[in-house]
Length: 277
Image 1 (cartoon, rainbow, N blue to C red):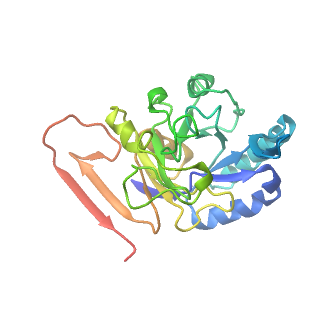
Image 2: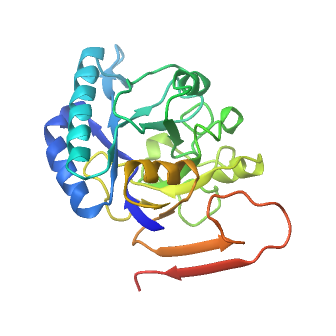
């Protein structure tokens, strides 16, 4: 099995599309594969002067999506595994998710609710990964009551926003105060307590180049470096995340990998961790 590293959350905006080649060149230098997360939103001034985030004009985002499709196909043909993806927010009641596809033939969809998003991609190889889950419910925090573990096999619990694992840990969510504060009501631990099978990763949530230090990266355990093998590793939750330097982590329980499901009882665990220092 191979350990392959990436930043699953690199948001490129409409006004940054002329930097797509540079972002990709940087990704090729520092990552093993790259799922790009196009960001189709912009800030709009309301009549009161307040800023409101909303979708960019449809023509703009469709044109950008085709550029990303063309770039993704070219990079894969050149031997660099790259996935198409975009950020979905809906009405904010279910939390923000990044949607990724195995193939390069899908279109972006922007329904209001998470269940509609899942249903829109029924029978399509697509995943929707929640992030910064510990913000307030109905204000872009994760709604675990609507979660589908098949469509969303894992969650991003550390990023430029901080740590969403719980609301008591030492890594707070103070980098984006306009979206806070962090709450235990929606944190990652609530999903586990609800009985959901959901893995965890770290990634950037960056709006500049991918893999910014201290903003998180993820590892997927895969049989080889092909897109298909990487996809299978992600779907099986064979993933983990780090907040800073990469760590070589091997953890099994009765030879089951991280993310596999085991029955309650006694198990033989093997743990090996090799960090940077």
